Length: 83
Image (cartoon, rainbow, N blue to C red; front, side, top):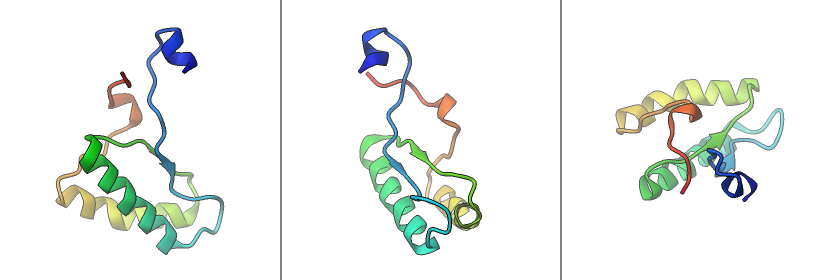
């Protein structure tokens, strides 16, 4: 709300991939599936992940699969601002 009030660019985070270190890979995969559904419905989704080993492992496995399904993975700086 503050960014919009001051006419600043912003995006809203939809979710975190994990809650903390040593999160189960299954949990992280499920979050990615939910994020993919949001992206399909909304056209884009912002998710945050931390550089924990479990997260990195899942992303290495799952991002190529998502790209094969037509998803385009970009840094948040390449997304348009919220309206």
